[in-house]
Figure 1 (cartoon, rainbow, N blue to C red):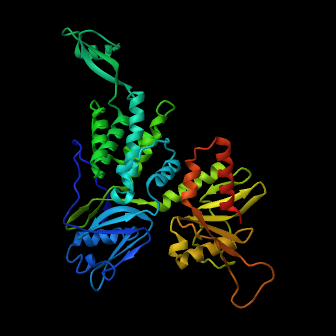
Figure 2 (cartoon, rainbow, N blue to C red):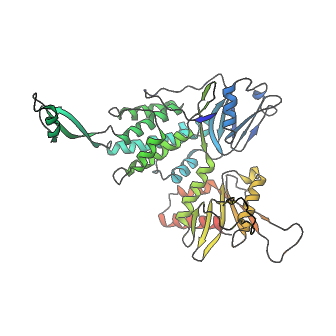
Figure 3 (tube, rainbow, N blue to C red):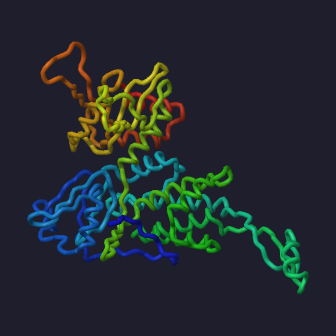
Length: 452
């Protein structure tokens, strides 16, 4: 079995239509439903649909679809969006919606501050988080087009009646001299049809295939018409990589648009190929956990004055083989917490970030075990889990790690579960107050998140 990502055909944008034959099921992140709580699940099954069974197995980390006694059971994780599995069209909504979510996404990925989400696109429960990303992409492309479509000089070798550029003397010699009224010339033409613009147009095509909002779709069509001189082709990951690596000072304004295209490309539908069949299902899944980690990373990097954060700093010395205790020479794991906090004197402690609302949904036991190891390896014997919440009642929780038999002197290692109020963070990042007041509030909020 091989997991692949489907590609857009190089054709005009075609408005996607939802499949009305599928049974819609709407959930929140970190949610679970079964036939007992959702009557529409009664009698549903993957049956003998091998493609749907392979798909359900492949996406189990994102959305867990299993056979139950009375029908299918669905469990979600940190991924939001929608996907079709067998007889179900599964819609997963984020806990934060509308303008607040847009503001956080914009900040996390370094996008310009556009007011792009109107009444037709909120709440995200109606259309999905992918429409927020598509709206941001449309705004970025509009800004690029307002400045003028970027052009590049491209070399062309052709026979010309009126010579231009460099005459290719060696080619004349190979032909045996001048045989007609033309000369072989190498010259340069300024074209819009080059790699960066082709990727931008392919990104618009991909975005158009993902939205079911007619207004947004028409907006993308209008933008696509501005690229009429640019070839369209299926979007490839290697093309994105090449274009991003080749960005210069003159083309750096395209980076936010490329970032959004990569996000949409990563979300785009899933396909499963087996030895006997191929099954392709459209779907758009966005990992809110990676987004939340990136959001906190940028916020802490920018707003901790006398402290510093390092992302995914590998721990040293947490595990070690006893003398002569590694006869096979096995390497030891080196856990990588999401963040390591440092002062001028050195390491202070480790922090992890999870988008799951621990206040409302609790936490898996393995999270506590992992955080306990981080606490035991920290100089201050503490670790912090930062989790996103929309609950105004959420409060910090502390768990002490105690020896089950022998009690040592002094304080016990501690795991801290600390809520991050997403609405408050969105307001700070979208505040209309003067810069100095906003900067002080952000610094205070960042300090409160990392205080052990």
